[in-house]
Amino acid sequence: MRLPATGLRRMAAWAGEPGAAAPRPDAAAAPDAAHSRAAAASAEPPAATSAHGTCELCPTSLGADHRHLLQLDERRIVCVCETCWALHSGDTEFRPTGGRTLWLEDFALDDELWAAFQIPIGLAFMLRSGAHDAAGRVVALYPSPAGATECELDLHAWGRLCAANPVLDRLEPDAEALIVNRIADPPQHVIAPIDECYRLVGTIKQRWRGISGGSGVEEAIAEFFASLREGAVAA
Image (cartoon, rainbow, N blue to C red; front, side, top):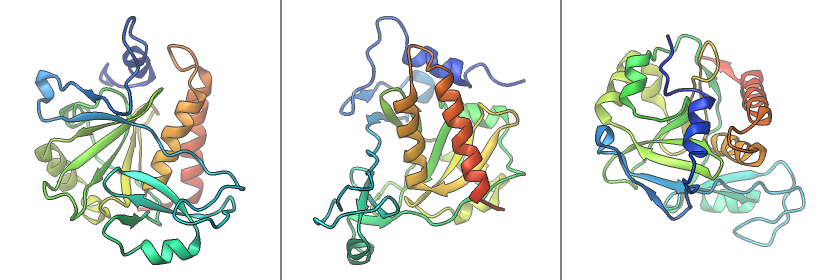
């Protein structure tokens, strides 16, 4: 039996509660008592760059197929040209996004362990912070009509998840994330580049209609995971 806190209905209830304002990019969400360690903050997903856009670090024009860097302090995806990607990949300010997609067929994550993460919806991506984060945090980001909301994960629960799934020991900090989709039946689990995760957040924000999100959101999520699976390697 799936926990009632998961699924799009739970996302819709959180997003469309009467009288509740949508989270702002500069607002922090108040942690609840059961999740006192969580520090939630809303963040806008990176805007998609068109085929006629320009590099965000220089005036070079970009095509539709271009490189991305992760700006570490703001956890923001930056669209860049090949030259800037090569110049800044080793900077302390930036990190190249991951380059692999692993479809995890036998991933072990039961309802009890999922509940320990206190993520209020059934769709999220989890990532480890790199050396720039002295606290060594593990965070989850989950999509909403307003963008991505971040919360810090309980390290004990994360340790249990890694013990059950050794593939997570090789998760590249900042550059890639574990995507958990418990809206699907059966649930889906993928390790993907961090820019793919933000692409999902942006797509949901663009397709959301009304209080519940509408059928467009469900279709967008299904299309996203079908696309990931098509290009993924089984782990």
